[in-house]
Every structure is written in structure tokens, then in C-alpha cells.
Image (cartoon, rainbow, N blue to C red; front, side, top):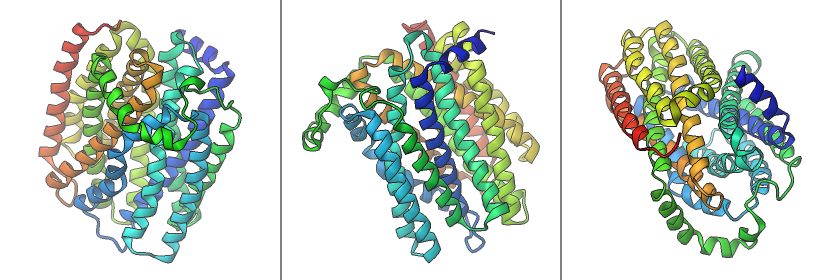
Length: 422
């Protein structure tokens, strides 16, 4: 099979394997950390969770740094990306340890959220740096395959980390602090793994690196404007980002719905709800893996926007059909389909951005990409808070998501005809 052959060649590239190892460890730690936060905020027995509370937590954790995300990208285009991966993960290991300590001493919620916020802030740099560095370790002919393997493998690692967190929480230690400390250990391992990559390997090129922080900070605003202008001149990249934002919004709204269903409609206890949520995340992760296998083959036949249109169209048809019963088994099937379609769209978007955006601007564009990801998810949680009842069953939310998917199909088919990409 061509996919297996290309994957085998890709994994022979030492620098790619090392960068992938950093991603896997880092995103596994993300999964552990995020599940620890979710269980602390949503599934603690003393907390009466509502969709509005979930939306508020997401807004506190994601929105403040979403607004400064583009500035992180400008700095990424001036700092050595290897160093960002090293020091970013070291800092997250330290901050996650602080979060664990705050859980143990039962501090006010605003202090806890402040600590968690610092970890997500550093995450902006690390994830955008991993994506911006990928073209430095593979050739252009293998970029689609690399974009299938690397981000998808990272998502699977995050899912595995979430599963590990569930297992530790349910079977080993009934303590969210212990789970957070596990995440801190994985962040440390990711930092150590980055030392296997050369300081200069991941770029940017030395002649564009600003070694002094003050100089880099002073040019941030100008660089941001330049990055937005660069994106406006590359319509394919802008359209792909818009499509991914809509898909992320839909996925986020349905995630909140499933979370509420697990918490109240499908379970009689917090531990049972946690188990169901873990199963849903695992099934969605299987969809991510399927997207990694299918996307290179489908992109080769349909093109980037054609494959995105198939993903959105499949979701538009299957999401209401499977979601309306509000039953566990159909919803788990929907979780697989939506994992596949959302990740398939992301693989195409990553590839479009990396193909048409210059290396000198790639860091800030991927930081903007990260911002759109977060804003879409928080916006989806806000809409879900308005539409969802306390048990999570909402026909209007299912219908809204289906309409968004269907509208996106029409746009993507138009963009496919106008695209300069094959």
C-alpha cells in the first residue's frame, strides 16, 4: 500500500522521529492535564456542573491567551523553535506541579484557574512551534503524509493521555492532584526528548532570529500586521483556516453535549460518568487514527478542499441521524465519525497552510490557527450553554450543528473550484 510505504520512509527520517517523539510526549501530557482539570471542575462530587459552568471554565482557560496568541507566533518566528520546545515543556512541568499543589490545599477557584491558565499559555508556543517546525524535518513530497502522521499521532497521544488519566483516577489514586503530577512528569520527558534535536535544526533561519527579547518584542505588532497581510494574499490558506474553525466549533458544541450526557443522563454516579466520557474520548481517538490512514489517499484523489467537503458532508448527514436518539451507542458511533471528519479536515488545513505560507511567516500563522481553534471551542461552549438543558439533550443544538456542516460543504465545493492547489 502506498500509505504504508510512505509511512515507512517517513519514519526512517531521524529528525522527523525525534520531533514526533517530542510531540507525542507533550500532547500525552496535555491529555493527562486536561482530563485532570475536567474531573476536578466537572466530576467532583461537591460540584453541581451546568453547561454555563463548563463554558465559563473554558473561557477562563482559553480566551485570555487566545487574544495574545498571534503575538506568540511573531516571537516563534524569531526564537529558535528547538529552544521553545525545550524551555516551554520545562516550564509546563513546573507549573503543572504548582497546579497539583493548589488542588491539594483547596484554594479558591480563581487561584486554581490562574495556575491552569499559565500552562495553557505556554501551550500556545509549543503546539504552534511543533507545526511550524515540521517542514524543516521532511521534504515537500512527504509533507501531506507528515501532516497525517504528526498532528494525528499527537491527537492520539492526547487521547491516550486522557485514557491514562482516567485509569489513574479510577483505579490507582482517587486524586486529581496525582493525575496532574503525572502530566508534569510527561512534560519533563518531552523537554528532555527535545535535546536530541539540534539547536538550529527547526529554524527559523539564523539570519531572521532576533536573539534579544526586547528587540523581538518591539517588532511584535509590526510582525503581526505582516502575518495577517501575508495570509490575506494567500486565499487558500485563509479559506482552509475558516473551514477548520467551523468544524472545530461543531466539534466543541457536541463535546459539551456529550459531557453533560455522561454526567447526568447516562450515569448514576461520578465514576460511571467518568468511565463513559473516557470511552467516548477513546472512540473519537479511533476516528482520529482512521483520518490519518484515509486522508493522504483521499487528498490525492479529491484535493485538499474536496476531502474537506467530504468530511463536512459526512458529518452533516450522520450527526443528526446518530445524535437525535441521545443514546450512548449511537452517540459513540457519532464520536468516531466526528473524530474522523474533524481530524481529516485538520490534516488538510495543516498541509494547505504549510504549502502556501512562507517559512518566515509560518510561526505566526500557526499561532493564529491555534487562536481560531480556541475561540471556536469557547464560542461553541457558550452556544451550548444557551441551548443545552441540564441533562444534555437538545434537538436545537443538534440541528444547528447539522446546518453549519451542510453550509460548509457548499462553501468548500466553491473554494475547490477556485483553488490553485491540486
